[in-house]
Length: 356
Image 1 (cartoon, one colour):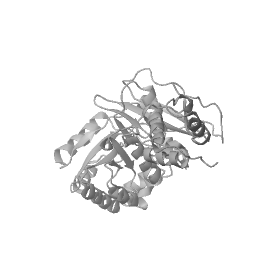
Image 2 (cartoon, helix red, strand yellow; image 1 turned 90 degrees about the vertical axis):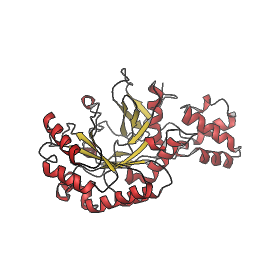
Image 3 (cartoon, one colour; image 1 turned 45 degrees about the vertical axis):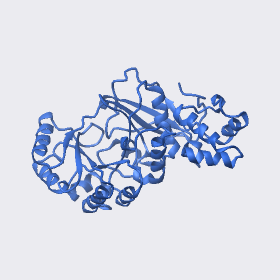
Image 4 (cartoon, one colour; image 1 turned 120 degrees about the horizontal axis):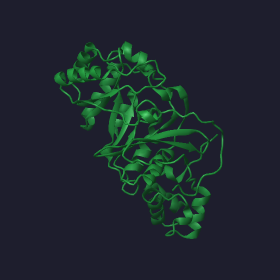
């Protein structure tokens, strides 16, 4: 099934151009952008500052109903919550709301499933089904923002999929999220994570935007990383770390390495020593993530193992090292646990006019 284009795929200035192409003044396109992105309105009938003929045109060509929320929102806004969204072709993705003392973060998906087959990640069991459009990515944030009473502060591209294998759509979505007439989220509060797609890391470094980069590392030796993350065969650690070095020097921004700790796999003293040696010359920080249980054949380290590995690194590393405890593991909403298992079909009806 061919996925239709949507006005939600466009930046506000591109909406202005679209309005002009239809015979309307450009400012009507800017007003439409404000209705869609700032007010979260996807029913043209409620866009009362726009003329009726323009609203009818949006109905006919806008394709604004991109995702449908399945189930209810959270009752407790102090805990992480996983949302299931059904797409217009019947496929589904998950997004996660992650609150903390200082931040309210939305973790978005960029693909349906994932092609990388990382052995510790639940999403890999879905395989790869398709890329998301910019509008489908943005729509996840729009729906969650509408349901959550607190203001969204951060967006991370760390949900389903490899963002850099959907590079153009991800960057367009990030620009819409950042745009002052879009969702107006600061560029430094938007983070794109990659498993290590080297050409796109280099391309990301050349962009004129201040989005942040995170790299899913998980091992510091090629043999082990290839077992955990097959993409390492194509882009081994030497190439990956060189690309990261280029990124930090080009952008003057620190990179975040994500390291999922698995018992008897990657938390030995040797692993720690090699992390210190190989990451020491980079402007980086290291987030240690205790493995969240999935159907993968790995175990979460004991608390004392986690603490020993962390303390050993913190005492020796020239870069910041911290544990990132994943909220939401009890809801299968934590790092590595996203997976949808609903019946797929080509089309379906029943989009609400307005999610509320």
